Image (cartoon, rainbow, N blue to C red; front, side):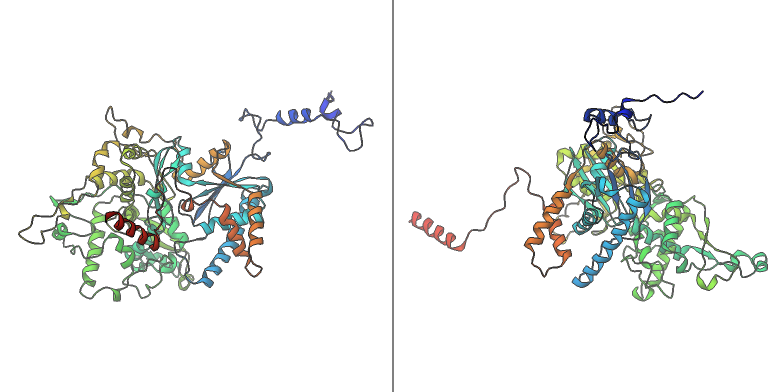
Length: 608
C-alpha cells in the first residue's frame, strides 16, 4: 500500500492563506534561507554550496589562446570543452590605419561568435548570471583584452570579469607561489619569473620558437624528405604496379594545416640529445669548423633552422607555404656558389639524423590533390622516422639574437633576476603550454639547460687584433649560472634525473601534480575561482560608468569603437602602464635654461 508523503512545513507555508495579504508569502525569510542552504549539490561534495550545474556561484573560467581555447566552471578539475580556433590573432598587425580597423572589426566579429558559442553551446549557461575569470597571457595585446571585455559586457551582459595572469595561475595549480614559468604556446615561448605571487615583468623573456615555427619546420621537412604514394587509378594497377614505382614528391596541397597538426600531435616526439662525437671527432648539426671531416660545409652554410627556409628549393612553386611570415628561400635566392653546397649540407644533416634515430616510418592516409581524386581511394603519406623524432630540434637550436632557443631563453631570464633569487627560481621551473606536451620535451629541455650551462667557450676565442697585444678575454655567457647546476629542477618533469642524497633544490623535480602542461593555467584559474581569489576584477557597473563618462567627454563625431576603446583603457588592467613600486627612484625633471643660467651666475658670484 502506497503511503502518501506527509505535509511538511515548507508545503503548508508556501502558498498564501486567507489571513495573509494577497500576494505575500507566509514563509519566513529565515526558513527560506535555511531550506536553500540545506540542499546539497552532490554526495561527493559535502558542502552547502550548489554545484555548477544547478547554482550560479561557480565562475566561468576562459583560457583564450591564439589557437586553442579551454573553457569550464571553477571548482572542477578539468575544462568542460577544449576546441581549436582559426588563428584569431598573430604577431603581425597591419600598419595602415584603415587596414588595421578592418582587421579589428573582423576579429571582433569572430570573437563575438566564439564567445557566444562558449556560453550557449559548450557550457549551456546564462551569461547574465555568471562571473568570468579571463586568463591573460603576459604579452596579450591590450586591444584584444578590450575587445573581449566589450563583447562580454555589452553583448553578453556578464556581471564582472577577473583578469588573471596565466603563469601565476599555473604556479597556483601546483601549490607554489614562487617559480620560473615557461609557456611554450603557439605563437611564442615566454619565460616569466614569479616571486611570492608577484610576476617580475621586467625580467620577462620570449622567443618566437614555438608551436607555429615547429609546424612550418615540419611542413618543410616533409616537402623535402617525405614520400607520397597517390591512389591507383584502377584496382588492377593497385595489384600490379609496386608502390616504389608510384611514389613521388609530396605535393603541397595535401599538407593542410589540419594534416600538419595531426602529424605534430599524434606522430612526433622529442628525442634525446644527439651524440656529437663519431670516431673521436666532433660534429655539429649546424655546421662548424669541427664538421669538415664529414664533408659538411663551413659555418656560413644553412643551419638547422634553414630547413624551414630552404625546404622546398626544388619545387616550382615555393613562394607560398602557409601564412607563417617565414618565407621559404627558393633556389634563385641562394647564391650560385652555395646552392650545391646547401643541398649537400641538408642531405648530410638528414643522414646524421637517420644514423641516430630509431623511430620507424609511418604511413598516413591523406586526401589526394584535386587532380588525383579520380582514383580508387586516398593517397598515402610516408613520414620518415627521423623526421618524427628530430623535427623539434628547431626549438632547441639557438645562438641567434632574435631566435634564442627555449633553454637559452630560460637562462637569460635567470641572468636578469636578482642574484639572491636565482637559486630559488632555478629549483622551481614549471613548463606549461601545448608545445610542451610533445613526448620527451621536458626531459630534453632539462638536458639542454645542463648542456648550455656547461658548454665551454673555447670555440669563441678570437685572435688578438695586434700581435703585440694580449689575447682578449674569453666571454663566458653563462658562467654566473654554473654554480646552479646542482639546483636545476623542473617541477613537472615526468622523468626526473637521479638526485644525490642531501640535494635540496634538485629534489623538486617531478613533484608537481600530474596535470597536463596545456591545462595547468586553466586548473589554476578553476582553483582561484573556487577560492574566490581571482585577479583584478572589473564589475559591470564600473565598465558602464567609464563608458558613460567617455561618451560625455567624446565629441559627437567620434566613432563608437573609439569611444568604447577609451572607456576600456580606463578600467582594463595593464601591467605595462602600472605605477612604479614603492621605493622606486622618481624620474628627474629637466631644469629650465633660465634657472640654470641664474644658478651659474650665483655660483660665479659666490666664487668671486
